[in-house]
Image (cartoon, rainbow, N blue to C red; front, top):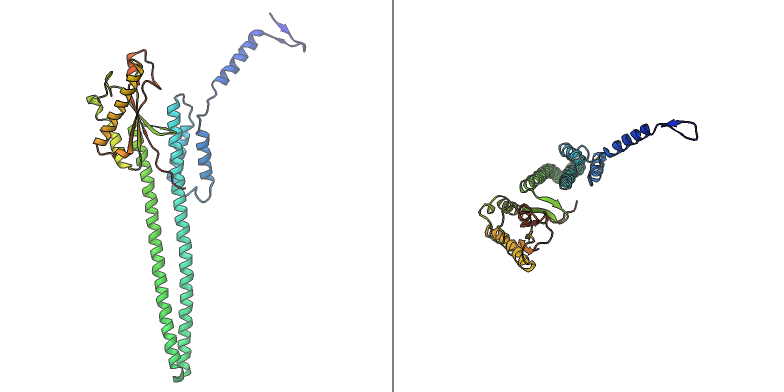
Length: 327
């Protein structure tokens, strides 16, 4: 069957349906850019466009670009997307910090060298003038002897000042080299932190780094750590807190939904207290650790299966972000 429109053209319905299906399929395959990736790319582009910073930390900028490219890749796993964007943001910030530090040190060295050179030139001119005065005094005879001696003294003083200026310039260069070493150390610390976070398998969130302790951590209705739970991530967490003493942790205990809600709330509190006690027994200061019971709230899996209930019998450790520093 064919249909004729007002313009006289005949369109076969089967062809129209086929074209529409192709267009819908094309639209459905358009990749969606991960949330936050555009902001990371914008920050990187700003850094690469800054003539004062773009070439001062080439390796860090290249690493940041690679991380942003990974963050821009389409991904259905929201946690993986958030982790990639977080890593991209940190890489860009590390690159910017290195570039700003090196730019500042280059400027300081340049200004210091110019200032010390100007001071040295002035002292040299003073010394030359004093030497001329000495020669003139000698030519004028004995009556100018006292004045000549004074001029010689002035010349000596000027020469000593010039030598002191030269020493100060050398000290400034050494200070600039030390500052560059500090910048390299800061970059290495940032890389070590990223490795520590990856080892913990913690996820970045608005509250900080969240480490979930689940699986066989606790038996059903029990607040004692299972024998297999006393190591692994708990020991990695202790090592992390020892390495970063400015971080604090908030421990939140959870249960499955079986049993009385009041009992579950108390059980979750005891589980959080058990993890807190483990950390303090390993030498972590008690003032850095808090514990709270959440009961059966906020389940991460269905409570209708044994595996789901096991996942819900968990403890979440929220590691605080470090204190903010001015850029």
